[in-house]
Image (tube, rainbow, N blue to C red; front, side, top):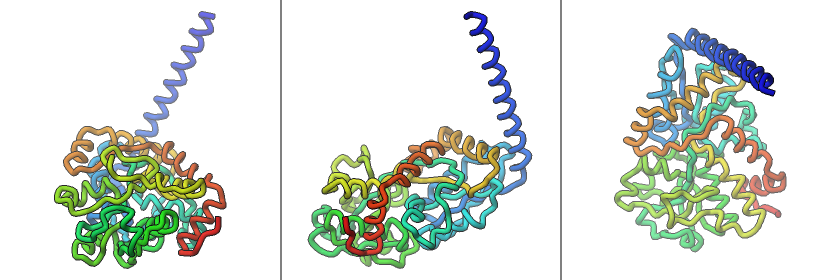
Length: 349
């Protein structure tokens, strides 16, 4: 028995040596590849939006964890609530490990709904990870006289939307259909920054999709000066910093509604996704994932995030892929029910 144990130990050491050798070889290959290269980080919204803030934070720190230390360029590609960038990342961007993106979390579900404008297979992206779990919120401006979610069930409330495929348009439709609110989403705003400015000018009464983390980082004065009324948390679990704000799951009236909410809001678990195009060489995908994971633990990165009041609650690529798998395992009748709501039709259970 002792001899067998010694033999197993020797074999384990040999395997470890092989693995370490493979890791060293991959690092050497990455150093050769990335040296002198530029890593583009694509963002589907304009400068100052929540995804842009996260992308720039990542861009300031990730290169030092990549052998060869490539230059980093942030490229904003706003359009169709981030769908234009996501299609570009999947179909046009180089598949050699020199392009990654932070697409809108809610778009990964669009192929499931049969959206012909979503020119991608969500399961084929090369997952890098997610910078934070998120909690989307539905809130109103302090002058709107809509202070509770129940108030939004009494009269029409004008909220901003950055595109028909985006959560800022779809979340109000879901809430209207499933809990009886009367939100009216107004299209035409490029991103959350535009919606925020319109709300401050009095053009809009509220916004349903901006996350708690983004409010803290991009619009801290809204909190400090009590300029918004947070009506509802749009997530599967409540945020520890919002103990007095009701959770949307508590308003589900039956199993179908609970499953619909789980389908729509599950992506909050990978609130700030980072992906690369399909078919990135495996060794470079590994380098990017390892660099991402190391960045999420980097003391300078975390200090920078704290200074900017940005929430960092990362999950790795494997965990993000598991969330996506759960979303795509949703029963077909629930998917069709939600599709009908998004098409602004009366769904049939």
